[in-house]
Length: 95
Image 1 (cartoon, helix red, strand yellow):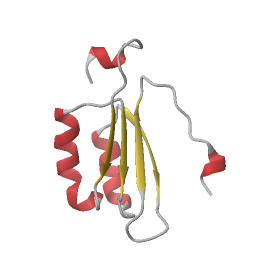
Image 2 (cartoon, one colour):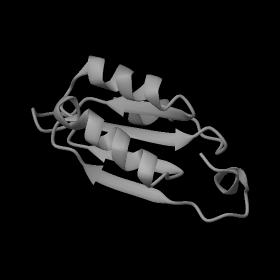
Image 3 (tube, rainbow, N blue to C red):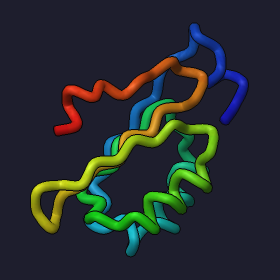
Image 4 (cartoon, rainbow, N blue to C red):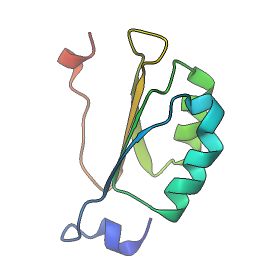
């Protein structure tokens, strides 16, 4: 992350990406985010894969990552927010 992203007055960049399968495209996601850093990253279609989610969280430790399995085999989402942005998970939406 750059110093500009840490500045509260800077623009917030948001990336929304349907990855279809995080396990298959994890390295591509890493490359994309390294070339185009964003404050908030939303990955949909992740397919439930705990190993890939853990690798994402470990690689981008400067983000707080929240994940949720989908209701079908194509579902699943990761929302990653840069740690400079205060955020908390609302438990009412976890069910």
